[in-house]
Length: 288
Ligand SMILES: Cc1cc2nc3c(=O)[nH]c(=O)nc-3n(C[C@H](O)[C@H](O)[C@H](O)COP(=O)(O)OP(=O)(O)OC[C@H]3O[C@@H](n4cnc5c(N)ncnc54)[C@H](O)[C@@H]3O)c2cc1C
Image 1: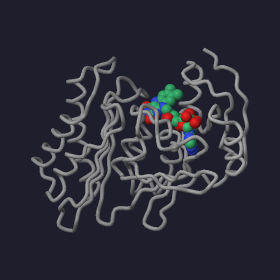
Image 2: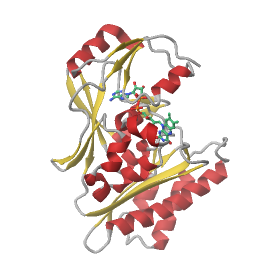
Image 3: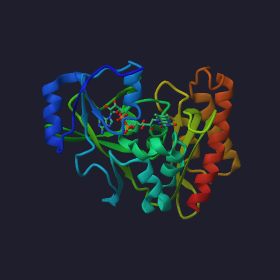
Image 4: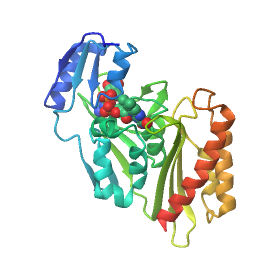
């Protein structure tokens, strides 16, 4: 199908974008990579009267470590994550995820900000952000505010980004000790959304005891989900096989998958258990 007609603007500053958002009201939408929004418009699930393209606004695409945080600009493309030395050497969870997203064409244009602002529990970065305990910087005409990732997703395609606001940066607190991360999703065919996916971060002290753990789940709950009981089960342990098996069992019990074309509920719970175990082992090995 062809999208309904709309007007298009490409401001070159954030101030100009906010002015347009203010003038045009809530029928206007931000356009980043367009790989979620345009398909929605073609299917007529969305029919914004105006698109405000933020691609010409400088200062929104960067990857840097600053003040104890990994800072990723909202307009950073999936392909930029795959090519970043900082990401590939220390935060492999992002490349694990981006390599599994769609195909190179989508990854060349799709942005990390758009991936989470879309608010879809089937997208891969929300679970990664949960595992990494991300903070999301949201900017509006009055200034900036920061929202913790656990308060960011609050409904079906609903996030803390309100009309008149732009998601500008994602900040990941850099773990102080040794840490490892990993993400994997099971997909029906290459480039598909997840049947189930699991994102993991573990932080270890000098003795190899787990001092912090983050586990996020993809597409097995109406909202992107933190496997809180699994995380708690790991903290204070040496992450032996028994600890890992317990955390994986809790994740498979606590998620809420639905039966659909990607598999039935039992199958998805089984996937969560198996992938959680594997990702924990991979994250531990990367930490060491
Ligand atoms: C064939 C195909 C397969 C795909 N497979 C996967 C997959 O396996 N896994 C996956 O995670 N994703 C997948 N996607 C989605 C893709 O990764 C999108 O690019 C991504 O979800 C959205 O990023 P975008 O920059 O394209 O956002 P857009 O489509 O431009 O925007 C998406 C939504 O977010 C809003 N938005 C965007 N940026 C901002 C911002 N900075 N501030 C405020 N609001 C903003 C827009 O208004 C819109 O509502 C697929 C897409 C396609 C077309």
